[in-house]
Length: 72
Image (cartoon, rainbow, N blue to C red; front, side, top):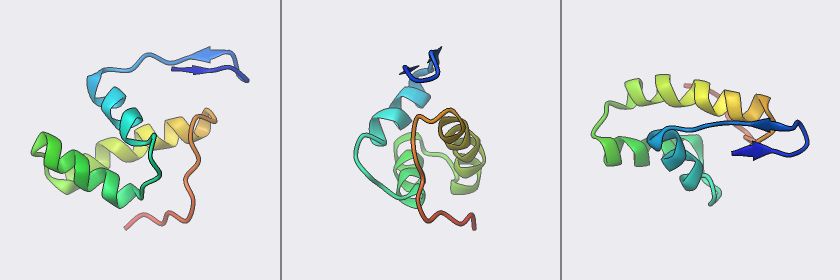
């Protein structure tokens, strides 16, 4: 993944790539986590603990925008 404005390239593993593909369609953080839990048979708490920092990294680097999110 490349942020042209910052000139930064980001490598992703297969799960990060799956998340990126799921973000091509607007969704909520909650629905993203539910989808990943279904796909990977992971507990919601564990999934959220892994996904939220990744989403924050994407936001920090200007790769995605999250609107109206308040962590549970």
